[in-house]
Image 1 (tube, rainbow, N blue to C red):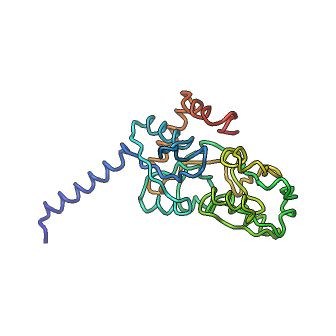
Image 2: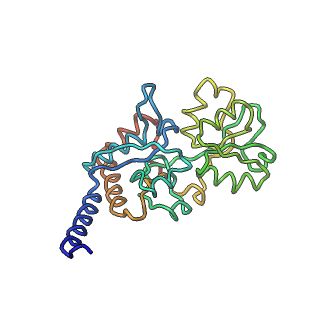
Image 3: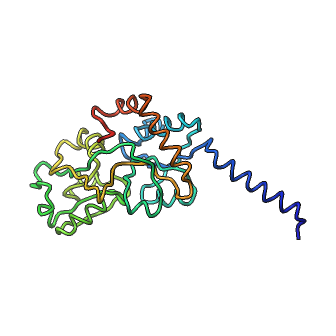
Length: 259
């Protein structure tokens, strides 16, 4: 048995280490780099996008060092709770289902989703028009939950993909009739490219709060409320000092923050 003094020293050291870990001098940011213009890779392999710039601005506001950890979307919450990173800054909608597993900051942006289909597909975007059609979505996304909760009940077949780019590829190849996607991603990563010329948005914008929540927030572990609170303070600060708006203007010609 160890002497009491040795045990006390070990406990003190452990407590000191835990306290130091919560100073948040470095914040590990989890993201999936396949969601342009929010998160993507430049031709030379560098991470870029609105989410990346926002994460760096928040870390700067907190006098913390950002490090980025790439993670496939369908395992990103699991990775957070397994301590692979400290926060998810990757366009994650704040939903009640996700709140069961993680905590969220306030929103840092909000845009709707919408269906993309071929110009000659004959779809009007209503659930009834999708009966018997194949709809692609990003696995684990709010779009997947909506498609399964609304389109599948109307008779559509919903297929989930590991990345939105894979859904675009199948749409172009005719293996899908439509894909439900964030409107900014759909426009920037598909419709404005050569391969998207035979496609268009169809139907109304989709932003049902029951499926999509109030907007995109930063996810943290439930055991880290102090990090959530500090990130909320930083979000308010960069919106107040103009840093947020300067970043947004690099990528968007409209108010990405939303109402």
